[in-house]
Length: 111
Length: 110
Image 1 (cartoon, chains in turn purple, cyan):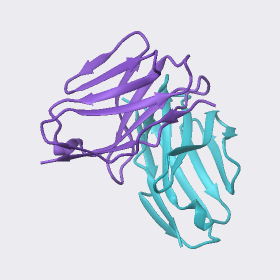
Image 2: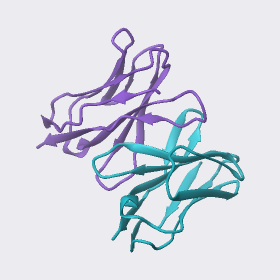
Image 3: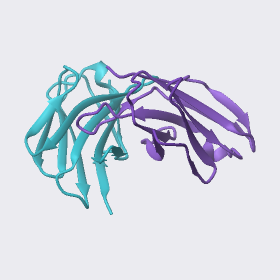
Image 4: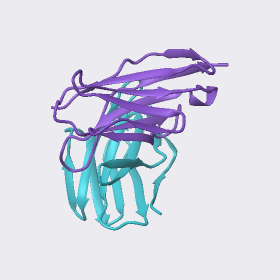
């Protein structure tokens, strides 16, 4: 059974700082990784995905993979109060197309 | 483009009452469809998934059931709700490995 672990937080950062969110995964063979953002009371929204062949940058967001230590990070540069949300990490189990999710890290960006 | 509709947004039901939540997907054919539940303070739990009409797989034994009467319609049901059924229910469809969620239903069983 694949597992995904995240620190539940809350992670509090000042506005304009870099927020660093981490996620560890159990299956060394995992090839793809997904980050979702979930605002309170709303459904998760896919914001980033990377494959095992490298890191990815999209605007203020950067996803980095450390295969040796089996963790994936999401960096948010120039954090804004609107980034305050719970961030969920997910990996595919290899069948049926569904994802296994971590419990999420709650991020709070203080003005 | 693909869209997913889920309703109702909120629901308050007494213990022992029936449940029916509906989800429809537009803009794609033969999608894989999923029902997830998110209980307060807990992660996303996969309840059911379907790869086609009438094909339902259950991940967790419980008093809930799912049906897929049409290609792009997925229904979550219960004959008698329990207090423990309270939570945020999310329908999702997959495009390759990516999952896309509906807006969710907040269910409170009292």
